[in-house]
Image 1 (cartoon, rainbow, N blue to C red):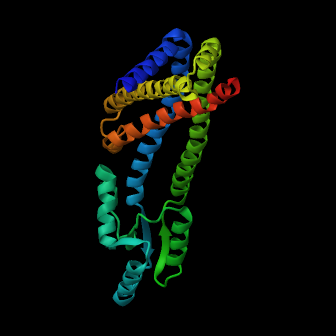
Image 2: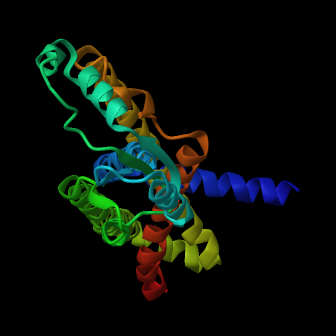
Image 3: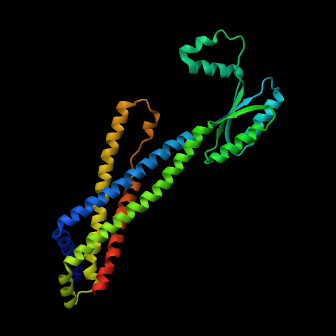
Length: 302
C-alpha cells in the first residue's frame, strides 16, 4: 500500500514539475487550445439552437391546397379523406371562403375597412395540411405538392418554395460546415498538445536518460506527460465552456433588450449537464491524443 502511495505521489510530483518548469509554454498552449475549444463550443451552441428553432418551424410546416370554386360536397369530402391518408400528413383543416375572408381581415387589422365594399368574396376555400415531422427534405414537399395538384378539384398548392429551399439549404450548410470545423479544430488541438509535450520531453531528455539508467520503467517516465496532456485538454475545455457561457448570457440579455417579442428567445439554451460533461470529455480525449502523438518521440529516445 505504501509503495502504491509513493508511486502515485512520485507521478504527481513529476507531472507538476513538468507543468511548472515550463509555465509559459503551457500557458500559451492552453490559451491556443482554449481558443480552438471555444470556437468548437460556439459552433455546437449555434448549431444546437438553430436546429432546435428550425425543428419548431418544421413542426409547423404547412401546405395550402386551394380548391376550385363550386366544388360539390362529395368531392370535397373525398379530397379531405385523400389528404388525410397521405403518410406525410399530420393534420388537415378545411378553411371555407367565409373563414378565409375573416382570417384575411384579422391579418389586415385596421386596414380591413377597405374590404367592406367587396360585392363578393374573392378568396377560395382551401385545405391547410400540417406536415409530419418526418418530412425533412425539400424534394418530399415538392413531390407531395405535385401529387396534390393532380387531384380533381384542386386549383393550386402553395408551400413557400423559395423559403423552404433556403431553409433546407441552410441546415445542410451548417451541418457540413460543422464537420469541417470540428475536424480542423480537433486536429489543431491535438497538434498543439503534442508539440507542447514534445518540447517538454526534449527539454528534459537528460533527466529521462538518468531515469532509464536507474531502472525507471517506460510507463513511469511516460505517465507524467500523459497527465500533462490530460491537464491541458481538461483546463482548456473548462475555460472554453466558461467563456462560451459568458458570451451566451451576454447575447441573450442583448436580444431580450432589442427584440423582447421574438418567440425564438425562449428556445435558446446553453449546454445541458450531459453535454457539458461530453464536451469536457472531448477536451480530455484530445489531450490524450496529443500525448499519444508525442509519445513516438519518447519511444525513439529509448
